[in-house]
Image (cartoon, rainbow, N blue to C red; front, side, top):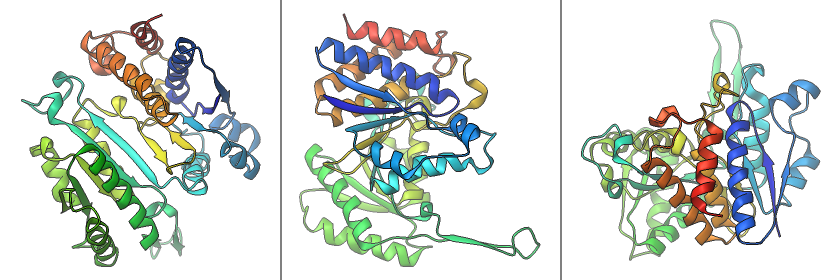
Length: 348
């Protein structure tokens, strides 16, 4: 029996996670199996109520699960969203989930702002390094609040960290027969850039069968719009992977269709839709649950249920094809209605 921790999050995170859980429970019932889904009281409401974000013991207990399903986090009532940093980044860093995998798929050409594209043109998998870079929080402020204030944000890259994300991307590219692109800013960030480029060459020598290239992140951002079919697997430092995967999501209909997984092969996985908490939409029934449901499909894959994952993906595709979506994708249904339709398409 798989143990899944559910952290609904804040804002629409609660609304869309409910639909993802609905799908997971339905799949489990169809297969006559059990998922132990345990909801955790972690988020803005808990922080505002108790002043606690997450304790070391809670972090330890979460790490004992097979997977974590996490809703979007962020609440304007919490200055700086400290709770979100402690929980989300805490889970990534403390559980050493160094792979942030963000698949981008075009389900319907009508959803893309690009003309003359087909679903075959946009099949991109972004491997974002997830435990280093500028997101580690190293640096500080000097003379804060004065005209002479200095803010330093340090970009931390280790050979170990760079090599293991590159190796994961090479393995994925090899297994799927796809081309791999490294993106960075080695021209403007020569120290980190040299480490990434040199390690890319070293690891790449072990994968002579994998076609590969490298491109500066700003150039790649432009080329992803100009010729999206050219890009297949992208590996990137933390910040650039974050930015470029959001851009890629914009090519297929927005963040409402963007799932993600934070992984360390052989260990627990953390699964979360890419979109934010959109507090203004919370409880309105307008939030698109498909990214959360696609994230649940990734979770099923992680649990060794690839056929169930494919069935969920197909149900999402069918929902989009028939226009049974929330308003952001041109439909008229509410959040729960979309979840119900996905379940119906999965069959009794």
